[in-house]
Image (cartoon, rainbow, N blue to C red; front, top):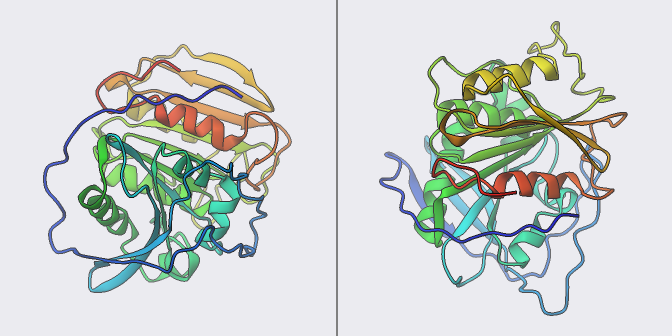
Length: 317
């Protein structure tokens, strides 16, 4: 697995969200989040804990959006030698936050003081990604995009975070919300990575570019690789979704292809504003998060995300 190196940067974010009441509740200290099986999303064990690694104490934090109190869990060092990236990970539909934490292994990044990690909770374990998607949140038009913006503002207020390195990861329903959030707040997020999800529509013309990595399995039955035009909502094919992302970022026609473990990676670099787009395809894989092999999907995502710092040019990979 390639080594991941971060160069800590500096930066400030101007302003906060109007009409959002922010509060924080500290949970009882624990060493790990309890494992809860997801309804339809297989999980893998947490990354092993090295004896000398920092163990972040999770907190249960709250923000109030449109009069409704919402929760997210945070994993952060009490002090850090400089500003850290912010990594937000969105669970799939029917999946508890502890499950996506175990499935992805991203807790290891917080343990190594490489990021402040946030795990938001969807209402009834679902996210309103727009276009009628998905579940309880979609049916009740839950303001989940505003919720994400609120927790970013809360995190920037509470921890030493570099606002030029705010990263968003989404799985399944959470991935669909990630794309909708980027359309609504393109300057808030530096880079986005998803598995098992596609944008439900392209962003509006003129939306600023954001670096995106879209990963998918060719045998996915929940997110058909060739799309599902008759779905509710209709799903574009992976190829069509990547085309939308390339158009938003003003990417060149030429791409670079490579094989990285079990994944086939296609990259469009030199897009507008120093952004880039990556398509990561897993032949024969389904909807379950690819957590085995070397490198893992999480490692590929972090390599992609962490080379972007929001200052116009990706860092060397």
